[in-house]
Amino acid sequence: MTAEHSATDHGGLDAADYAEFMALAAEEGFDVDGFDAADGEEHVRLPVLAVVGRPNVGKSTLVNRIIGRREAVVEDKPGVTRDRVTYEASWNGRRFKVVDTGGWEIDVLGIDAMVAAQAELGIEQADAVMFVVDATVGATDTDEALIKLIRRAGKPTVLCANKVDGPSTEAEAAYLWSLGLGEPYPVSALHGRGSGDLLDAVMDALPEAPPQTFGDAAPGGPRRVALIGRPNVGKSSLLNKVAGEERVVVNELAGTTRDPVDEMIELGGKTWKFVDTAGIRRRVHLTAGADFYASLRTSAALEKAEVAVVLIDASETLAEQDTRIISMAVEAGRAVVIAYNKWDQLDEERRYYLEREIERDLVQVQWAPRVNVSAKTGRHMEKLVPAIETALEGWETRIPTARLNAFLGELVAAHPHPIRGGKQPRILFGTQAGTRPPRFVLFASGFLEAGYRRFIERRLREEFGFVGTPISISVRVREKRKKK
Image (cartoon, rainbow, N blue to C red; front, top):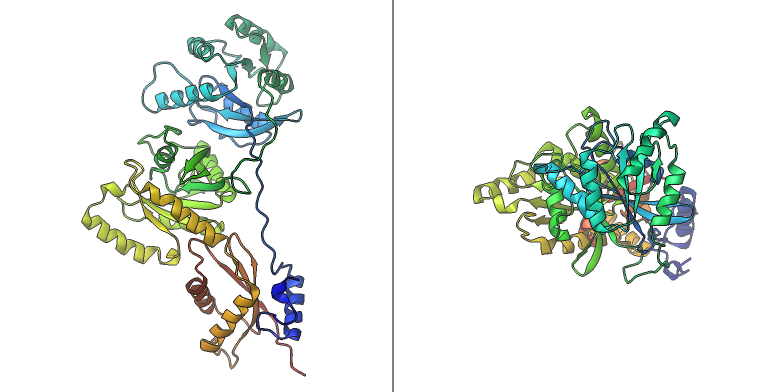
């Protein structure tokens, strides 16, 4: 028991009430003054393997096989992967990073050229390269051109002959010796055949990971920020702007991003892990193929994040989809920042109507910090970090039990619950059951109506802040112990 809960201070409760309170808290499984443990992340620079090849040779399927789970979006058509997407993997006790890249092609234009450029960056920044060829097709002119690119980069290269599903295809894989990249390793990414020998070769090509070090970053590693919103609101443009490079593919085509893209970014004197996600469409269950799996990946990225930056296209009328995405972040229990993008495109009339739309449609999230930015011009980007830090601070705020019960006592005395059916429920005592987001449990003598709970939440925010975070309030109905 902490000093706060000494014999002389029980949060405004007498000793008997406090004993009952602690017993009920233990019964319900609440640690009254325990903090949530932060997720620890090791700060280790792991060796990087770039998986490259032309479209539809099975790179993403192979990446899923290497990391042991279905993370990369896969569909039986070319061009599904577009950005460089990094995953962590291990083999025989050695950890490394795998970078899945989009299909590389010669002399392409538009979005395909951007995808190819991202693949080239992946090669440039990797420690070793896995070059994937479709053994059933053999080496093409595109493969030959990509080999020249890999040779210029001077990186150790492992040649993977994919789609070798049986002995009959192994002879076709042997022809790939002619590429001059050494032994072709025949594998079936779909069935796992030959993947062990391939990974042994990868381990020989990759440098050893350096000794584990813990940098100057805050405990728990860089804070995780998910960029979410409907398609084409500028999430990828925002990530590129804060990263200071063309980290992800940006195109007028809505739905360009499919796999969540992680990027470590130095911003405001701190290191952050920003995650660009696929745009959340109106009805996920009606999407198909790559878009369906992209939506699932976005939901998973949101669950792993600590704060969600919800991007809204300020130049367009606030859509029902925008409010649904905000609700999705709130229900996931993330800290929330609302960023109105494309602010440079607004005139005075649109600003007036946008304010009216916010007052009407976003009244339930008035507590979320708001920033008006332009990912295209960089306008007000310096305001993004303070908003994120404010939201995280609210997300992790904890109120001492004594102070909370003193607050509740004053609140109930000044504004008692309305009488219903001849009874007036009273709040007996309360505790903050956790943080990230703040969760409160109130022990009451009867059921508390939803309107009264909302009133309590509003007063909690007025008294203690909780900017940028949802608050959960649950009620446990207990009959008040009779005095003897």
